[in-house]
Length: 501
Image (cartoon, rainbow, N blue to C red):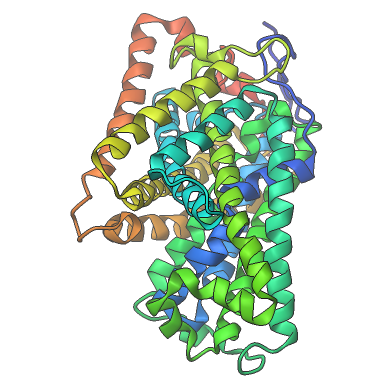
């Protein structure tokens, strides 16, 4: 295998692995990738649920939570996309943390990412099953436990995951456009009518944002962005990844942040700045649908009930695809059974990793279906634990960017802002959110303070397991160890040679 080098002041050259039958492939463009990412956050579910809860915690200034999260994650995207330009590998968190902190901790972080996304998948299945059951009931269909409807969703998602990601992208795109239209119509009508009491600057008053509920509102807001970081994970399945991935990353952050900030503002105005918090506390689940009926039309509110179900299905499909690709990447590096790295000869999809994801999530959901009649518990704990894990990874990636470029040198054409200042700032912001999430873990997953704190130990156990696998390979299988982090056996310096100043 040939090596490349870069002389001071020369252009940076990348070693892009050849495309062959062992690599995923696709032709997604920026729009498809953005819509796939947006599906993860389930816009209609967020507006109908999470925004209402955030208003209940922080009050009329809730839109500021999404604006703050947008700024922090735009700064995070600077270092993240800089890495995507210079590290042409599809491993995302796995690859970047491996390069910054070493292969051992890199595999540990990949295990953490995998269990985090799988936990989120299981949690969304519970919500999707509940939503589909409620919809069938409204349509006077047969009555069945929530897990029966979750199984229906599981069959659909498992089927779509078998094929090329472009099929999933088309399904996600259709659902996302419909959701955005419904919420967009609500925003336009509510703002055009001035809400209940007229337009007001109160919801964007920073002085009203600092109170006892600020931390929880920020946690909700940051949680809505989970999934946008997966853009780099689809590197082999998009056209022109060097352009598509950075564009999709920035567009996703801006769309998520501004869309939810405007929607929160509209929902607050629909009830009046001084009355919104009381309404969200007494009836958070009805807040959006009642406002939609009032300011648009009752019929549109009924359509929204249908779209909540399709939104949940789209969300679980999106996170399923992300989970499958982490299993695929770990399988490709032998950090999990290598059979997971199989690529379908026709569809060029990670079909075995996708099937493994489906089976694992089925096993995770099954005990709750058998022993519990409360799907809300699985939804809360799964989403909460997974969100905590992904936020931790995002903070670690910010530090990994700093460490990598500090060791290899700043590339020609990159500023200090890109390789050090922005990643440090994003680490500080994300670390603050992570600390709050850990300290108030009960607010993230439910239950009494400290009741489910042990669940964080599950995340640590997976990190330890991944590190253990890497340590074993370092001593027993050095040829496999050299490939960890999707490096194809190259050294860190060979992977993406950079130039010193």
